[in-house]
Image 1 (cartoon, one colour):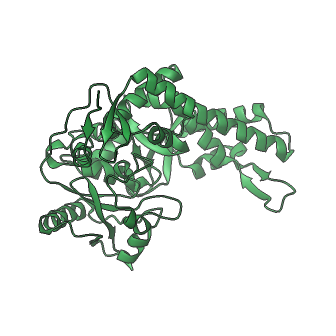
Image 2 (cartoon, rainbow, N blue to C red; image 1 turned 90 degrees about the vertical axis):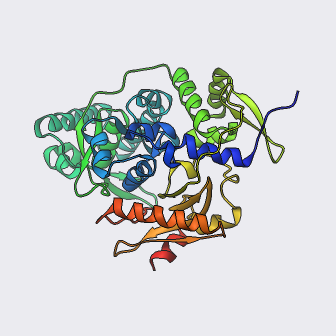
Image 3 (spheres, rainbow, N blue to C red; image 1 turned 90 degrees about the horizontal axis):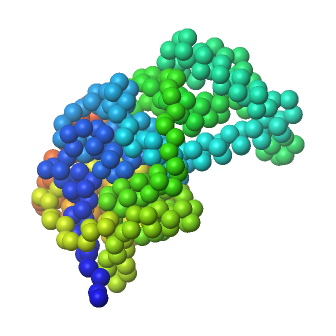
Length: 389
């Protein structure tokens, strides 16, 4: 019995609908924008806002700030691939149990190893005391930056030597590491930053860890949602996206029970159970997505939506994608914001007049939404640099 065929065009149709990028598919809430792609990349503060903007039916930066800092319907977690993501509060316990717990345990082991090698007698008991003092300071003073916490907690001003006796020996303060560990453990979370929504100078607040859940069950839930958002996809894609071991990936997929489909190049891929039918084409759509947007970073192999000839212009040396221009599920160019606020873009092919008109309209919508803010990606790419030169 032959496998159902999913064409490249149908894969691109799925992006417009499931990733909420086609105008008729846009989301009503910020949490829905994150759920549509499982998680929003949050390494760069602006990415969360710009990724949500592209998928929201209405609402400005203030709507996303409310979701992050008031309603807390969207939360940042150190999780997949040891990267910071923003996920819905509903999904957060699953992300925490499936991925963040293991990262937090590794972070703790690493810090304790550094403390031991430093030779000042700092140990697990000292670390527990420093953590408790930091939480007490947050309870006493309210939302605080890392600098404010260090000023309030003497232990956080402690310095240790990393790689003592080696040519790359360096002295570091422990504040950043302790704060990172508290965040990884879910005992503090990022609150409203100093400055605008593009700032990464976060304040911190004391919070309760997410409810404990079996890791295997949580991984199954993540895999189920990921397949729905990104299928057709492969075992290798899920392993890359999550950073899980191959064994954990295979167990999670076995629990989901995906169906197989055939792609146009003759290879096979996985989809959610029963998700083998053709995807109706949405209306034509254009999108200007930020650096590290999930739709551009959802697969190890992105050949169905990106011409390999364009990779060198759109990615940095480490494999981070920059701001991209999309037309009907395909990356057709890149964009940037100049210092005067102008949104500029360049096509890397010839998608046609209709595409250019739609992209022009979408660029104007983005410029109006961003307003006086200025966006400079943390990871600069060749095309983005050229556009702002």
